[in-house]
Image (tube, rainbow, N blue to C red):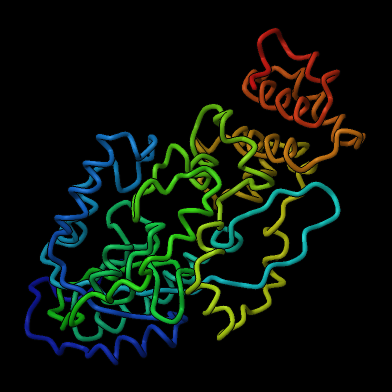
Length: 367
């Protein structure tokens, strides 16, 4: 969104407390301010990691590092960033009895819509005094975590997530870019991880290759969104997940402490997306899948990638003697989509059903 004066003139400048009040009233849990200077260090890191292949083909802020680390590209004349955080941690519903795919907490509900509503309220408060604004959240135009770090909201954990003091990392982040000359945070939050390395040790695929450095080629949260075959060497590690991975956050001591001090609220409205029945997903049509899960990032908007993930999850969590599982796997093993046939044959082998896998075209099953 954009609003307000074009000259960045002499309007009143809202205080941080006023902006925090506007954000809190609209559902934000934390608000901070940072200067809109370029993120030169972040740009260098993006370029270096892309050159090393650590991006694993991911685009987003890697697509154009200069753009995603220069706030003025989003709003010419930008002087400040007002950064907001919205907590998405909710209680986990029990899994259903039938084989089901697990969904990461951030993706169970459109938390970014809630975040944008809070940021929009902050932007309106700035516009009341004539300042121009633009809201950015989950947008490749800005590296949200670096903006939040500069705004004094938290520190970088060893899993590269931002942790808010006393609250942990279960937050989505976004910014209001503005030409208002706001007073920035006095300095970054000091590191709170110390010698802890639980997130590094808990990663199912060893994707955290150094403190704060994630190799996307191993990260399950990226691999479920990447096009092509799901890497054979990481299929067992995927477990029952079909979208996202929370392991590095679940073991994080600040997150566990935050849960004790502020127990997660019940989330009955999210129960339907915390677990997705795998048989139903694999039997649904394209339109039905996109209607149910179109908020997720799906390569090329092609539902076959949802089915690919579901077949791997079924191979890890289903039962070979379940007639529904056998029927669905047989259908995909003999189907026209060679990628899905291969993943179904892999699942059949894993479930002890070589009879089903034998129906696949020669050379299909890879171990």
